Image 1: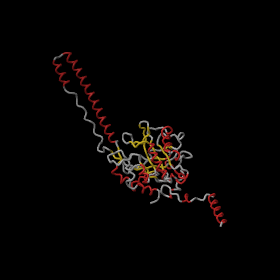
Image 2: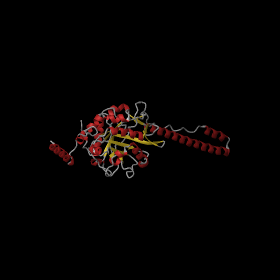
Image 3: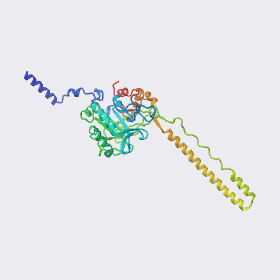
Length: 375
């Protein structure tokens, strides 16, 4: 009996020595699907939350892009989180366009929420796609909050940059090495200072954003070289917007000002009856005054017309998420059509990131499953 136990123990050690997968390795489920474990990160589609911090249940909060809080979004299946940053009183915040419009709180608090969720979901890979419009320093501003949150040590650093979409590690490799957070930023990156904050457009191309066209016409709008669009991953900005003042249109110019009041001519005529050179001189003066009045009137007319047109342009440019259209926008049909419309620019590949407003509405997760080949 002792001999049999010794032989079995030896065989077990030999199996491990030759790399036989353990039960944990063979049964690993990655981002909810065992089939995704051995797929390259660059060949996976992720449900993505647009301005994931901007959540509110108040329908009058027109700047909101989500109804669910951050944890609820991740519980729904969101694994890529988009957010826009701004400095507020010396603290890095996530805000929608301006912190006066929608303040989502500090970036540190946001990262700490994600860290807690990641700790409770150890077999999932997450992605950040952050907007840095003020080009704040990765070294002095961003890295400290990542370090303080505990996420910096979990962030993936590629062996070289940029990586082709086909060169990324598998989800299994990211999970097993403990580097299961991928961080992209649009502007202001410096990988020499902070190696894990990667330049988004070197790796991901995007079509136009803030669309008001429900057909989401596609073209490569933002991308950096040296990789071709076929070697980039890509994200569809599948969030529809509506104009706050849709009825405003360019109006015809203001009517031209009429001639200056006739009292100039009356004055000139009266003085003419007095005769002589006095009449002639005052006629000339009256003519000069009349001409000056017309010029001033024309300038005022032009300034008012310009101000009105500029006001109309500004009003027409005010966009808010089109919540009423969300069930259609977030439908399987609309999402697949958007991905398919962009596929010719990406070598026929499906999109990597489906970015949505109000992620719980419609069929976002089902569409992602379809794009990953599961439905």
